[in-house]
Image (cartoon, rainbow, N blue to C red):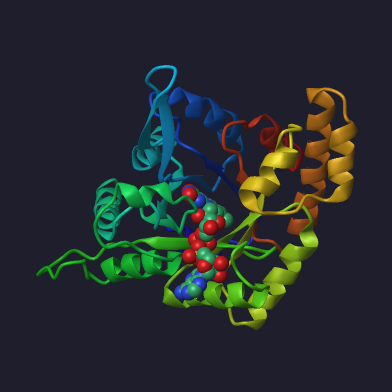
Amino acid sequence: MKIGETLAARSDPFFSFELTPPERGMSISDVTEIVDQLIPYHPLFIDVTNHAADSWFEELNNESYTRHITRKRPGTLGLCAALKYRYDVETVPHLLCHGFTQEETEDALIELSFLDIHNVLAVRGDTTDWKEIRRGARNKYAIDIVRQVVDMNHGRYLHKLTDAQHSDFCIGVAGYPEKHFEAPSLGYDIKHLKEKVDAGADYVITQMFFRNEPYFEFVERCRAEGITVPIIPGLKVVGRKSLLKNIPRNFYVDLPEDLVGAITEADGADEIGAIGLEHTLAQARELLDGGAPGLHFFVYNDATLTAEVLKRLDF
Ligand code: FAD
């Protein structure tokens, strides 16, 4: 199933969700426990994030440290295959510019084709340490990955090959209702989003947001600029106080004052969870009523509140 084609053919709302691979050395059961909670609600697809290398310091003795650069969360492709065949659900590995050479991306695409996985999400990535451990030509922007995948779909590999197989990938890309943090303006960012779509992206998944107005305005502006592909809103349930700091810091998005105020004053995990849940429920209902094609949940490592949202939405 290619997600772009499925979205074009269906009119009823769907949900999808996004996971991270377990940390190096951890078990796949960390992830399957999460999937087990959400699979009864019939996700259309599951995204698995990808990760460039991070640096970390190992203490050698009290005075000296050695610096290592490794991928903290390897295993995106294997996890996608494991989930696809264990749960009979479409999985979408993320492909990154950062941390991967073009040749490694080509190798990944070949592996995915062999695994019968034909959906990918092309994103740039944010980290910089990867530069120190990867040599070879690299993709700079997400559009470069889109072009590389489209080339393979036409049988064009990095090196000229005779009688090369055409791959058959559907490509998703990221969009930012509140503007990507590096873009000087929303218009500039949308212009580059349009380029990704014109290059061959089949749909857009947005960065998480917590007020719907920017999403609806973003969709309107995208449509006015000629972007016609589905724009799937990204949602996250704020179920812990620590997220009030982590979300703006990691994702460069704003949290609404009333949500911040209520969670700040809340007492205990249950009360915080209930506030986050009601907020996401209200957002989800308004988005679906307002014509969003579906909902994409950034679940990562805790599915309890997302499962409750899906139950209440009757998925
Ligand atoms: P791009 O589309 O390359 O854009 C990056 C910036 O450059 C933007 O400001 C854009 O306006 C500008 N730009 C784009 N093209 C050009 C050009 N040709 N010339 C000049 N400027 C240009 N990160 C991870 O590390 N792993 C993941 O798995 C991951 N998954 C994600 C999933 C979703 C749904 C989203 C929304 C984000 C995800 N991210 C992930 C985060 C993402 O990598 C960052 O937000 C990153 O900073 C931008 O990625 P992008 O693909 O939007 O970049």
